[in-house]
Amino acid sequence: MVIDNSTTSADKILRILGKNPKTTAELCAALAMSRQALRRHLTPLMDAGVVRRVGKGRATRYERAADPDHFSVVRAYAPAGLDEAQVCETFITELGRRLPRVLENSFKYAFTEMVNNAIDHAASASP
Picture 1: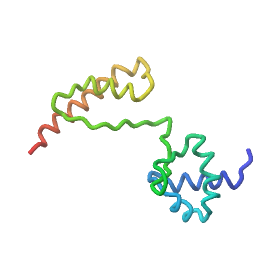
Picture 2: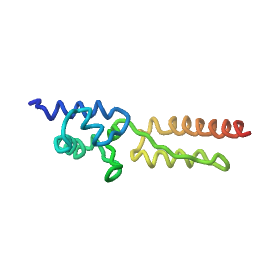
Picture 3: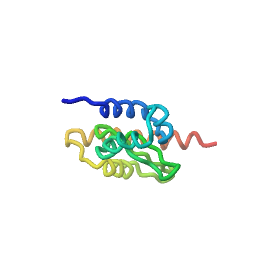
């Protein structure tokens, strides 16, 4: 495997992005490189799905794409009348993959219990 400057720059870009999106100007300043050079290094990272571009124009930010081995689904629900089984099914659907059969029932039980606890605690936290 040949390691060249673009690999080193790619590693630096990923470290700088960390968990917080950065603007083109922030990345250029941190890497001490021109916008054109940054673009040459960002393009293969975006093509590979490692980095993604968010926004347009001056509002453009670059961020690390989600790790395919990890996932997150963020939703807000009002606790009144919430059906924890439906929330669980929605989560599994948005996850985009089936759970192994041996884990599915245990996952559903644990997930619905957590949602049910959140509903209970949300109701008790109301003024």
